[in-house]
Length: 119
Image (cartoon, rainbow, N blue to C red; front, top):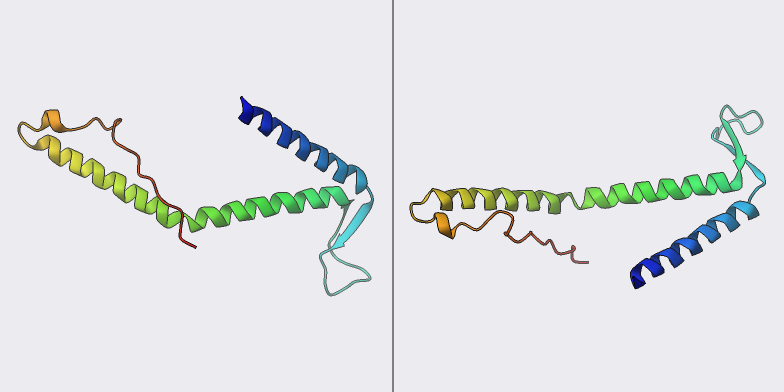
């Protein structure tokens, strides 16, 4: 219950900050993507400043998320190998005579916990 209240308060605060940014930055900003011809650029984007701020913020979040996902690839691969090894060992154990009662349920097996990378 407390967690939901804190989450709601944080989201309300972030919404108020974003609204304040949008209201304070309504002026139109022109961004030129042509570094060679400043007088007559080939590609120009004219938008309110808050639109550009939000686009850059969203782009940063997406790029950061992709970078984190790529960095954690080796941990996901290790987890897949460990799960495959667990399945193989459980299958071998169930093939042994008289060992059927000793095979734990796959749903009862503990999940692989991967520690965060050391800094």
